[in-house]
Image (cartoon, rainbow, N blue to C red; front, side, top):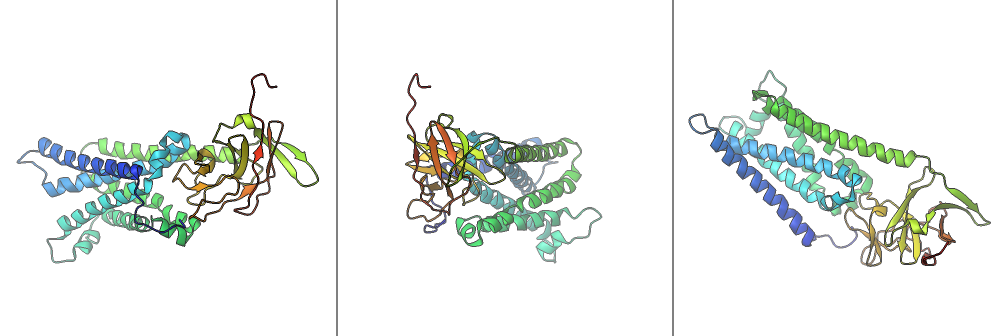
Length: 355
């Protein structure tokens, strides 16, 4: 966030990710229109604009569900983390598809009268729920999120406020579900579309509830740690060095404080906060790459001994005093000021036959 801003800092993963998104949208919309022509031939055919409206709308709803399940799936298994890495690209692409859907709706249903096309669509008299207005409100929220998705806004608005703004996705998602249920599904003669949208909402809700429950259990679960006191501080015995995989971390929760990540780098260990300042990513679920702790969400890096990002970046995170007695890792639970250097604690490598 602190280096020079660019619209997109391209790399191989971003190009591949975006190429897959574009291919999916083109394939889905094209396939929907072609199949619509096949299954609804003249004289009962559905017009091309209506097919495009439906194709873009369904594609947008499907993309939104994918976006919302990526986060919980990444919490369940790190195998889904690559999808999380560029999720904002998927979010902006979703907004473009949803906007195209809205523009076609306004042009097709409101562009041939004497009234303003937007007001003609949103404010027409109806005895049903104004589902068009619900969709429009959701689109406004998505527009705000897409416009502020860049790290420029994350840095200048502050992580907390930026996160608050982007939590609006759940409000917008509720509006989208209502827009679909009270709108397009009203004209359907079978219950399959309603069952599909209900199943999608159930999957999204269940995954979020399950992963949230797991996180709460970890934060408030009872973890019994042995205490070692000396004249300087009270140390907490958190694990054995053999519990930590090379270049990986052991995550521990001490009392009600935030989680701490203990990283093993060669024959040394270092401790830092588990929270990445970028978007609150779980640093302890990442690994050490090129000597730096690398966040699994977006690749932000921090040196394990002082919690500082390598130049030219200037982010800093809290570190913890650490030492090793025998093969046990002891941590002072009081965090140091962000960016404070703490000498890594060394230990003897494991030898066959050691007790």
